[in-house]
Image (cartoon, rainbow, N blue to C red; front, top):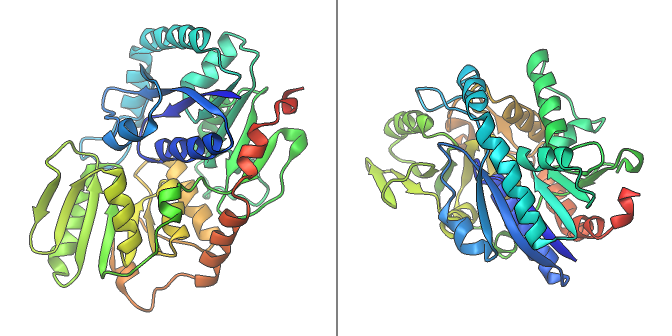
Amino acid sequence: MKYLFFVQGEGRGHLSQALALKEKLEKRGHQILGVIVGVNYHTHLPNFFREEINVPLFELASPGFTVDKKGKGINIFSTVLKTTWHFFLYLQSLREIKKITNNLNPDILINFYEVLAGNYYRFYHDQRPLFSIGHQYFIQDPVFKFPPKQYLARWAFKFYNHLNAPRRSVKIALSFTAEKDQVKRKLFICPPLIRRDIKNKIPTNKNFILVYLLNSGYSESIKNWSQAHPQTKIEAFWDKLTPEKTVFGSNLTFNRLSGEKFITYLADCQAYASTAGFDSIAEAAYLQKTILMIPTKNHFEQKCNAQDAQRAKIAQSSEDFNLSLITNEAMVNNSQALITFKNWVDNNDDKIVKILEKKDLFK
């Protein structure tokens, strides 16, 4: 069958998911006709994705979060304001999607949490199957528990899920743990999409901490901790378009985001600390690493990710980059939970592809 991908371009996670699923589908003889990536005024599509996707790539204007002046958290007011201001630009993106789908004529649409896809499907009444993929849909599973209070943020999260996944779509919830499918609700629970490059790595411990920052404002916290702990080596990746390496002191290096280099460092690190995205946490857990998650300020989805990882016992969570939590020998992860997670991924490797091959789910 012929597939068209829609991918949210913010961060690294959804891009990695698309690359991993492309591998799986092509292995079974399917074709990826193209990838539509939603980008915004501050999104820089990483080079690793451009280099590895190897199909026609379409970058279209899409809503995205606005970061606060400190470069740490989300500025909710500014995000809403800029989304409203660029409304007609996003309408033009929907018209472009219509042209692309008409030209490529895919059999199936796959959405990696890109809001343009859900609204194109809704407004243009496209009759092709649409599969919506993301950990975000796991909030519909009975075992998931929201962070306490924050009821408005909870409602907004559910509403944004609805925008991304119209009622007719099939939702595939990526999960840290094995749970039951809810076939009547068109909700299927699958393991995270781990790329072959990760699976082929043999984990080692080269005595350094790996850090990934969604927002570069957190770099000051990393610098301060590194100065207070000069005996600990830190390799960090951030979203700045800087030289390939930026060195701070004797033990801290910030690297421009690179797919291959990041994977190598992830396999070799002693422990991993990151803003609380889903995918790199899943990759680190697959490689059996000690993990610390720091939800980005005002990013409710990341708070949910962190709480769910703690439920699965594969990571710790903190409000700041206190790397002592993963260097202190007394603070260790549940190794059995990490083994269980890896088995969940390995033993259900083809589940998502088999679901994507079932057009009859839309009858």
